Length: 377
Ligand SMILES: [Zn+2]
Image 1: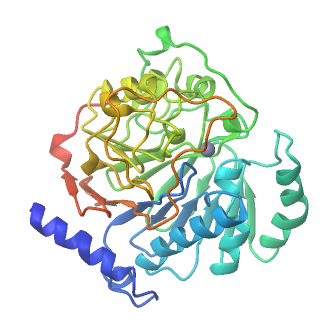
Image 2 (image 1 turned 180 degrees about the horizontal axis):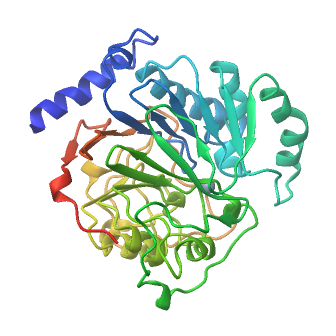
């Protein structure tokens, strides 16, 4: 089984070199495929339904060189999936590591539907100029939606439910959810900037498979969504986790949703610090944590084994320090660069709830069957 999966992953890499809608992936698709793309501590997560319809959440980083790099990586995933357009694009919030590659991406592939939370609420001259002068032109010939909690995003074959947007959360539990959340009593509020709590968050089901991506939703909003009652229920795969930083990822969210797998979109020195890793490693029912990058903030004490990590740095380190590196303050040297070849983590989910997670760097893949599922509330 392992050998077959490994060969499948290698075949997937070979397909990346053969762009076009006639790829084998597009013709014989039966799974929901999710590509967690490495955009260096930003976010870009691509969902492709068996119908061929797609949803991209965020577009990577903003600086011109970073945007070209990150969009190149997003396009490699889109080609691997045989896409010729992006049917739906969510920009979770107006931070440069999320909307940054948008103008570049729109030059490279048609985007049919733009979804966001509405106006920027954390004034920034670059963001405000983009929203005034560039963004309206990008969606002028497409559909544009300001998302509200409770909205559904139409992707044939998937159920995509907006659960947070513009600081609001769903008030009614999702079907089957709504039990008392035992983690609320010990909740400790966290810090917010203005934009992270605005994040558009979605809960996606495909048959019996369930996943969630909440952008950079912060702890205080996690509490609003999850307390006193757990309005999400459970997930099989928790995606993103705000890069694994500690202004998000409270127990009221992570422990209460019982993810079997979590995939962090962290950077080489962004996210993965000890307090978050303690929450994740102790999460009830968590079978594996996968990381898009190794993080110096974890050190060997808190990191997962390298086989679960998709990317290193351009200049490989001789060894990972045992103790985590303290999160550096302002004026610290930049984090280790990774501008060279990058690898995604790909989730392939089946209707019956079985899913496989594969690391494109080393071909390591693991299948999670429904009968291994822990109970959820
Ligand atoms: Zn972010």
